[in-house]
Image (cartoon, rainbow, N blue to C red; front, side, top):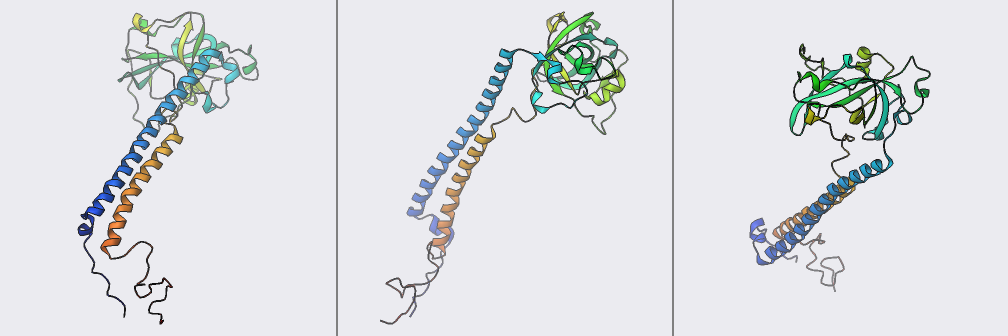
Length: 299
């Protein structure tokens, strides 16, 4: 005759048994170890991303700036890997086309980028890069940052004559569809909300480059921030490339999943025992002492 099934006990009645509390403490220790290993991997993810950026910057500094025409001919698409690459180009500023780009932050303060067209005279190719175009190209140059739409006139002055510009390359931005129109700036340069070469060519004329340069140095030099000129900007980075190393982030997530699994396993053990079952036992074999799997088999 089959033995009666054990009475079902409540979850907490089983969970508060000393044996289950001991197992819980053991599993919590395992979960804590997994959690700490996940945090360690996350720290390594950010450290590796920062180290990679430092190494890339050091490599570029050792090679020095490259000729713009060798990296990015005018009227060609901008490869994403060029973001943050240092380049040089020679030309003459056209201050009458100067603009201020609104809503740009530097060191926690919101202000304006000084955007000036540079009519290129030498990009390292001797003019070969624009030989089949309508004339010398124009390059947007972000000369720095100011905190007011009406800065002192001296802060916006450009060096006279031909100037050699060195700076970080950045891809053209997209026009902000549906954005509120910016107000007029009667006491300063016109305002814009984006550095879009597709829009700038309508104002400055072409040919034009598909990216722009964030100034680091110029010869002759422009006024520094200490002298009342625009404040220089840091090196731009490819969006999303400076946050975390994805491989280490994946390892961190794995460790946290393992830790969660340890807690879930303990809950499953308690529920199984509360239901009067054991893992791996799918039927009542109390009448089958030799493990044949056939209950009540006659001798």
